[in-house]
Image (cartoon, rainbow, N blue to C red; front, side, top):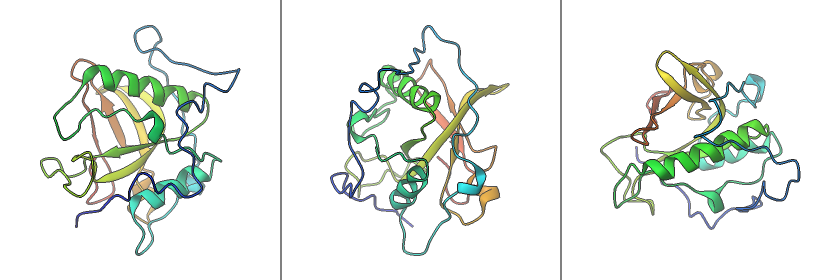
Length: 189
């Protein structure tokens, strides 16, 4: 099943503000080259997991997931394309994206990310030629395998799968790759 991502201009009542955090005088920031990788517990509780619904695509689900925390900014104005139809990964872009994600997490806000959950099968239906699924990053940490982000995958109605503690996207700063797996089948970002 190919999931078609709706046109990014169709935001509904959601914002698209690249300066969303710049307006906050108490802005929290993260600089990858200077700051240690943080451990950030999930900014969304398990009891707030948005379950999959029939005839609902992943973008609608992540909009519902972030709205629970009061976030209305989908981040299109602050998009960091690590891969696109021309290629990738772009390590410098990934680093900027990582800084953005951690800054938002440290501020208690989840982050919507587009992923290629069927590697080698880019979506011709979507403008970037890569994104075919959306997930919500909710935390960060580090373990023996490396630095990672935890995420909710709303492609299920099972909280123990969609909000599984092993839903991790690992960041490789040398290559710019951000890879991982979801406990939700068939989604594997």
